[in-house]
Amino acid sequence: MNTLDMFSLKNKIALITGGRAMYGKGCSIALVDAGAKLYLASHSVDSAEDTAQELRDRGGNVEVVEFHQEDPNSIKQMVDLVIEKEGRIDVFVNASRVIPKGGVGWFQEESGLDWSVRVNSAGMLYMTMLVGEQMIRQRCGSIVNFGSMMGLIGVEKRNYDGEPRMGDGAHSHDYALNKSGITAWTRHAASYYGRYNVRINTLCPGGLESDRTPEKFAENYGRHTQLGRLANENDIRGPVLFLASEASAYLTGLSIPVDGGYTCI
Amino acid sequence: MLNRFSLTGKNALVSSPEYIYGEEIVAGLIEAGAKVWVCGENTEALRDLSDKLNSAGIKVQGIIEYNQGKEADAVLLAQKLRNEIGVLDIFIDNGSNCLMKGWVHTFEEINENLQRTQLGLMLTVKHIGMIMTDQGFGSVILISDYAALVGCDVHNYENDPEKFDEDFSLIYGFVKGSYVNYTRQAAGFLGENNVRCNCIAFAPMENKVNEGFSDAFIKHSHLKRLTNKEDVKAPVVFLASDASSYITGVTLPVDGGYTAK
Image 1 (cartoon, rainbow over the protein chains, first blue to last red):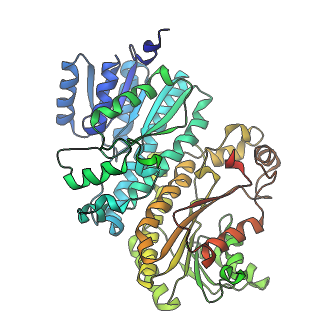
Image 2: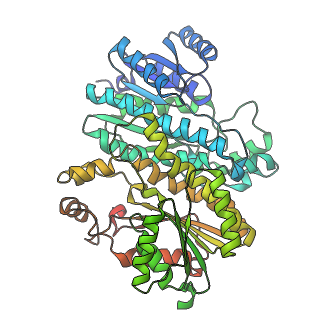
């Protein structure tokens, strides 16, 4: 096989959650550019349709599926629908999460933390378990989770110099707990799924620049990375395609930082 | 130098000591001189543990009923600690060992189990942390196991399907591993007020696992044995004491080198 063909997802069925915006959108672009048929699952159908149209405009074969990660019936219906239509799921990218409301940083309140545990932890595990069951039946598949560089290290307070409100928020409980769990669970699940030729890996991206990113924060953060900048949506495309495709056929259980060298020092 | 390891004059609270490692943790703290209270929802099990230790001359100060998982209960616990104990030097969470078995579960089973080990942990550490930051000192220790650092190896379970079911619980690796970076995160908030947060990742205990698993595990560890009681006590006392006063945000493997290879 030609080396570049190992990155191809031609004739593959891919499912992504949280694939309509930010890092998730970068992943969606990579998956369709590589030739996969993409099911884009989202709670926000209208916005997902806009993304789907953009993907179709660049030649992608995309279908939007509505689902709500806090609702087990909705999760099961979403996974079942893809299996019913295609008979298989080759790639699952697990990029959705909610940001809890109620209390900031260390003072986050029960309602927000409860919501985060239900959606980001229980929902994520249940959803991946269901997709994993299908991949076990197929005896192949690649699961790509979204961790974070903040699942690998603690808070650097200097990043928030000049942005005290952002700094308060950085001490939240649920994000570090959830993302740390995803990294460890990836190793654990890799051992469970390996017997069935199902691979599972995690991408741990760094901070993503948006039009709302305060200039001072971007400057502070950039200084902490080795490449001198925050990430953009395109930075995730190569890594996600590598993990999704046969190019990474002997990689499983990994959490790969995609963080411009933030965690290497 | 040895007096820096002493816990004389310090008050400690151990949550969920009825699970594995808990008895040794409580005994170790008391043997090092601390006054120890225990808390949890199963007061009967706590009373049994307390009676067992008391009859061996190791006196537990008191039992506090605490249903981890609700903020109102965490607030009540904090009030009780401020009123009845006053100063809290040491808090140890041993609740990560309350996990369901098996890989395939319903959403509600998963969520219910995470209420205690994730939501409950966050709420407890939040309110205990507020007591300690007000004091300006304290040591929080989260108890996990080696699965926090490496995946459990399916090959270790070839002669022990029952333990496979236990350790390959869908949420086992997630919960154990979530403690590692949560420890760093909590250390980041608490540190400015001289409060430390660390985690210990133990290997399985001897006499608590059967021969099939034990043989396989030992084969892959450097020290060729499982964790014994003394292996639990000493690291807990070290991280609770002033001997570790410059250590925070760390996950300490106590596993005979299993994760060092």
